[in-house]
Length: 243
Ligand SMILES: C[S@@+](CC[C@H](N)C(=O)[O-])C[C@H]1O[C@@H](n2cnc3c(N)ncnc32)[C@H](O)[C@@H]1O
Image (tube, rainbow, N blue to C red; front, side, top):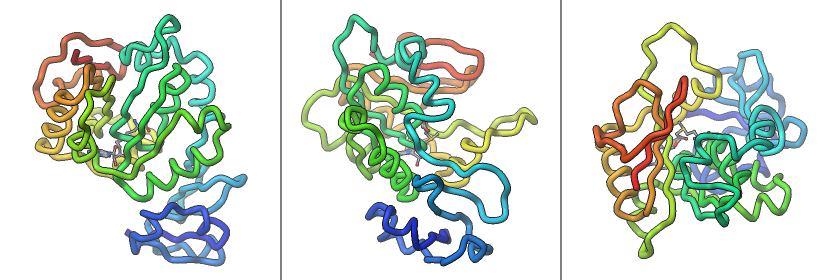
């Protein structure tokens, strides 16, 4: 993977990405041609784009865009309810094992949770780290970001966790409907986990947590073929709950 990073953006890169050997510094974004990705600053935010592609870059920002709007009504979100976060409940500790662009963690924190957020991909981890660093202090304190492989991290826990959440990459869609840009880029960057990886992640999570919540396409088989105890259906995605 070849990632062009502008001189202004370079100091904002987190250590795992700095150590990856993927970065090449450029003085001008126009020099990014021939690279897979470009990192630059957009309104003082670390921003990801594809050299030569039009459109807005992707940033992790907990206060803006669709996530900011959904955060305002988080208690109506099925994800928040599936994780057992209600106004009546005290805040819960949730481990989000599949960070991505941290959209779901944004909803969980708005629902009152403290989230340990795991992401194994150095580029995605770096974008999240920048989003957390810019978040208002109360929100930033709710998130502990860890650059880690989810199964390994869970296997190292000695205490039973409250809730573990996972959103592994969906299987490729069959319909002609185009993937949204963020989903498409997540797929390009992180790829689909193997059946064995999914099996280990789910099994380890169920061993170490009181509740496991899995995001699935609405019409897909349950993860690893293991039926959940109940689920929250929806038009595009459903949340499978293992208690
Ligand atoms: C579909 S995306 C998750 C999107 C995320 N829920 C969001 O709201 O933006 C899956 C992400 O999980 C990460 N991932 C998948 N399996 C993982 C594992 N076992 N440990 C850590 N990260 C993992 C991938 O690198 C990818 O960034």
